[in-house]
Image 1: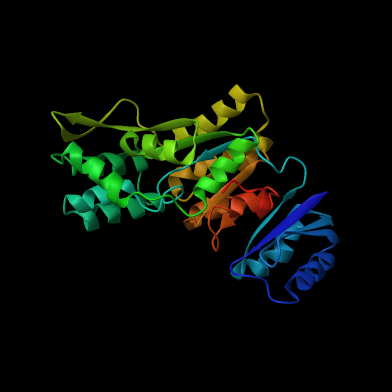
Image 2 (image 1 turned 120 degrees about the horizontal axis):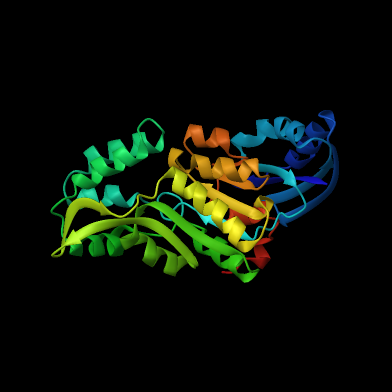
Length: 296
């Protein structure tokens, strides 16, 4: 049976769930069992009918809640593949490095255009890294300590999925200088990212090896599914920008969960679940996990 999950921006006002059920019924999606994942905050509404019709019926609630509509079978995923910057952490690392170099506005403008899909990611990345030439390796360490913080709910999401045996992968167009410690902090088992070239303790403005881009992210997702021997339906991919779009689209195309986390418009259009009001614990609610089951 399909199931719709509504996760309130704050808490649901009286009558909202009844209204949601009425809208489902009017769309020929007869409501069935209702179960609270957290009273007043997150609720599952089972229904009989079309997933597509239910999404349309509940769309008017998106101003007050994050909504995911999916099959109730296989909700608890066995693979998480996630972007890092502005998804698992609160900042874009390259922008913060640029701040230490005194050129944050220039680089941040390029970053935003790349994430919106207005620029080729690889060329935009190379152009920004060149501008960091001459920055000391110690600044990278300082940036990590002073600026990099986990996104709210990140550790609960990753650690909770780890408990039921899911494989967690961090794949980033950012840099290994940041992804390795972030992965260790949050509990990711596998990491893919770009390598900054550092010579004599100084950034050269170049990258080492193959560049992790949008196609790499998709390939990492597909490879992980194959290696684990699971269907794409058991995968959850999450990101925020255009660089994550092929990965998200692959998850959605395989009937998995492709999540846009406070996404840019192009990514939101490709995702089958967008989180706009809540933190990353919304991904636990989406998997039917009650708050009492979360790893704190």
